[in-house]
Image (cartoon, rainbow, N blue to C red; front, side, top):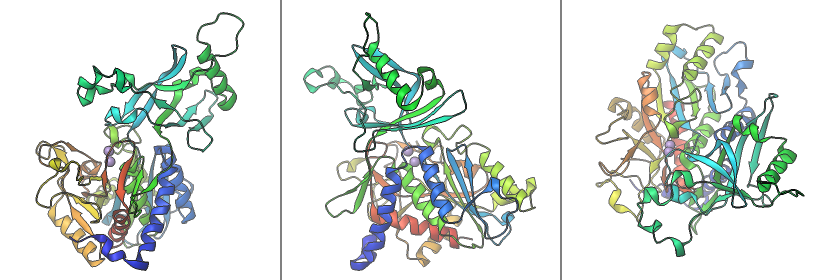
Length: 457
Ligand code: MN
Ligand code: MN
């Protein structure tokens, strides 16, 4: 497979770069699942999509979205064929590894106020210290209002961060294994250090001052943290990467990179034969559980609503729809890294930057365990559509056999009787604060997703 860049020499490069500029903007402004949903809905509304809950009757050609609790999103472009004949589905996740605040986060120690945290997803904890971080999320108050908080993204905002031990005093620490160099309970976030003015000899005056600021700026009390979802994420925007600007570095490529490319494909679908469906799911990084995760019945419930509004609801119709559906589980792959060649799969079974979208027949670990191993009959259909549409694609394993492994939402839909294969974009530094991907792979993925939605049958 030759480089995908070959197709975009000279003036042909502009659409690739323009698409990536749009992606960089989306990624920079979508650092939580909630922000990803809000920004996706804004784009969907612009493209003529309507809220399924606000529509009484649904017919072919309609463009609809279903917002699940602000944290996951479904979109449909209704096809001419009966839904019973199945949908063409793209599914990505919009949660990313991060560090969540505990429910009692605030404490004072040695004249400093810190935030106690519990990390979310699989991270190498030592990568998340000594960096400028931002705080994103919501605080839900007893009066029913929700306060949205973003600290650390504007140029004049303060940033937060987690300390690391100075090298001068790290003799003991440097002897520890990578998993223990920085431990989970040590991921405490620096939040402030000025004591509140006081005439008495009071304790915890720094915390008092911080609480005063929170009250003044956000009208929240300490107890309001009990009903909050606040996430510590790397501060700042995604950027071009490499002197030739061929790559993008940013927080949360996994998996907003496939979410955005799938979304852009879905937004451009008009009057399809088979219904096009986009799933942006939450909680993938922690096992896809909960009512916003892919294991939830929320997907089938929304499908039931859709069929009902077409006057075609029955339990059997839903079962047939799922059985006849085909899906690309759009999630990231591991890109070959010349700094760490030893973990790669040999013999052209690894993903490379610049060679297009990546098909993973299976993921899993220790002998494909836990994986949806896609059916070759289905893969043949995809190859045909992509070859017919001049899409650059490659196939890959997640590293060499028994080196590690991973999973996606593919098996969950496959367990619902859908034909599914993983198809996504290769990244370096997966789950680090800043991940890297190739712009041409991003563009090819968008084209591949669109070709899939329009042509697979
Ligand atoms: Mn992922
Ligand atoms: Mn991941």
